[in-house]
Every structure is written in C-alpha cells, then in structure tokens.
Image (cartoon, rainbow, N blue to C red; front, side, top):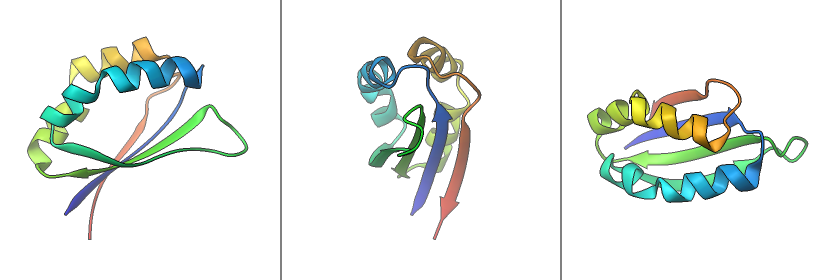
Length: 88
C-alpha cells in the first residue's frame, strides 16, 4: 500500500475545507482515499492529511498537476505544501 502525507498552512481553515470538500471527485479520480484530516492543536492554520493511494502514478500526476496548484491557491494555502509518498 502507498500512502500520501500532505502538510500545509492555510489562511482560513473554514474556507480551505469548503474548497477541499469540493475537490473530492478529483482526489477520487487520482485513487486517493482520505484516512486522516488533522490540524495542529497549537496552530489551526497547519493541516495534515493522510491518504491511501491505490495507484501511485495517478497520485503523482494529481499531486504535480496545475489543477491541484490552482485549487490550493483558491483554498488559501499560504505556502507550498509538503507532499510525501510513503510505503510500508
């Protein structure tokens, strides 16, 4: 199994979450299934996500896509996210 760990900072969590939820079909097409959505207890602007990825190639393409970069900008992500691909 491959996992994708994403960590980024957002300007407004509520705004970010609305855009994130709207992007669900794109994540599904990329074979990503959210297993955890967390935020830092000391800094609610820091969001950490863990996904299961059933197709590494699709996940890589999605994570490197212009569409995702546009979505992150629209959601108010304030810096480039850390995206880490992991396996057991």
